[in-house]
Length: 69
Image (cartoon, rainbow, N blue to C red; front, side):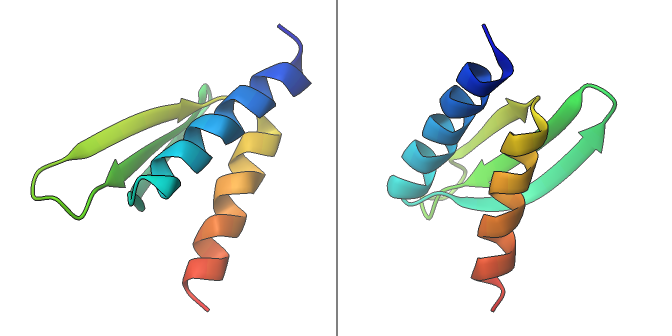
């Protein structure tokens, strides 16, 4: 899969979780990408995505920045 196709898949997963009411709770970055923890408004409902592409990292970073404005 090309980097662009992988980015599109990551963006779609992020948008799906955000659309379902999840919010980014925690981000852990390492050499293999970023692990983004999403928390739902429902108690104890969490999901984690492994974001590998640089564009995917930029995408969720923009979401975090806009949320904090």
